[in-house]
Amino acid sequence: MMNKTFATGFAAVALACMAAGPMAAPPADPYVVGLTGDMTGPDAGNSGAVADAIRIYFDKINERGGINGHPVQVLIRDNQSQPSRAASDAQAFVNNPNLLIIVTASLSSTYAPTISESRQRGVPVLFAGGVCPTEVFPPANPLLFCTSGYAADKDAEYAVDYIRSVSPGNVTVGFVSMAIPISRGGMEHGAKAAESKGMKVGGHETIPPTTANFSPYATKLKAANVDWIVSWAPWVTEVKTFEALRQLGWQGKFIAYAHNVAEEELKRVKDPGFLVFGTNAMFISNQPIHKDIAAAAEGKTKFPHTYLNEGWVAATTLEAALKKVPWPPTRAKLTEAMNDLSIDMRGMRGGPIVWSKDNHYRHDLYYRVHGWDSGQNGIKVVKDWVRKEIK
Image 1: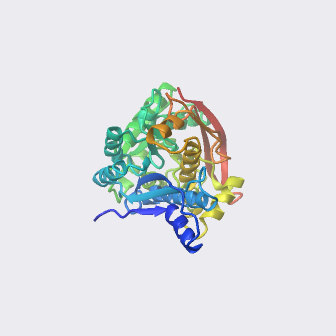
Image 2 (image 1 turned 180 degrees about the vertical axis):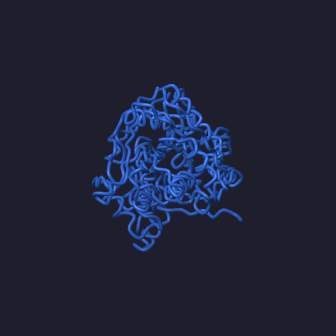
Image 3 (image 1 turned 45 degrees about the horizontal axis):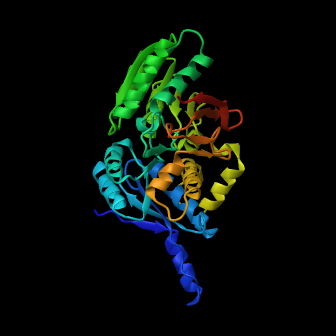
């Protein structure tokens, strides 16, 4: 099926000017952004929410007059996390002479074709929904940038550090990944980190994406007498493995990466032994920015507003970059602007996103752990922000 392209912002400005009558001034030329994301595929609950957040964010920006007097036109294409569709999207975007940047929000399997197309035409790419590719870490690829909270090896190291901080004695740790390279590699890295800290590794179960029955994998981990389990994988693998373990009577603790769905899922699972860690503040922190997101999203998305953090972070960063680009904008000007950015996250993260020429990830990473508090019947911060320097 052919991808459908949706434009926001610019069309709305044009319609408003037409309604104003024949003497109305024509709309200003837009900043053009292309977004290829998973709206209806296997990662729609995560990536689709990122795309919705970016769309809603720039709709609000355009209502206030745009950036530097120009609206932002966001072209959105559904790649369903299929590499071939992502390649088609990227080709369409790079061949648009007005397009400044590609934003991608889908599984990592779509990255290679997008990067290949961007390299040929000098188009910067912002990874906003999935794992950050290694090319954004120092020394960074000149065209690749990432605001996403996901970084497999760094995340695995933090999870292991957290377990050691709360379980200083003898402890056996198991690992759970999905059978995709980035997840499996992250958990292999985590197992090595655990061994380096004197912990026993009780096994690593890597589970196929199409798995329906998680009991065989949970049975192996339970038989290994693991005290803790770490999982860095798509949410379905994380939560279904945990639930299978509980059904088998396992009483240990499980720490999983906090995807966009995690806040609502913690409310559903209601188990103090199921912890999530990540780089986003949950909406339970009730920051002013969270109230702004909830208000802006009202009636504009099918997702709970608690799913919108990653997309809002990406859009905030992109707005800051576009503000630095003198008119007329070019791909090269935008890339240059992105090489020197520091963006206040206004409470969405534990600190700012800072990019430099050699580091397109961030200079400092902040983690927080959340869990369920049965006494309060709600989510609580189990471990507040911990800063990790990225070198």
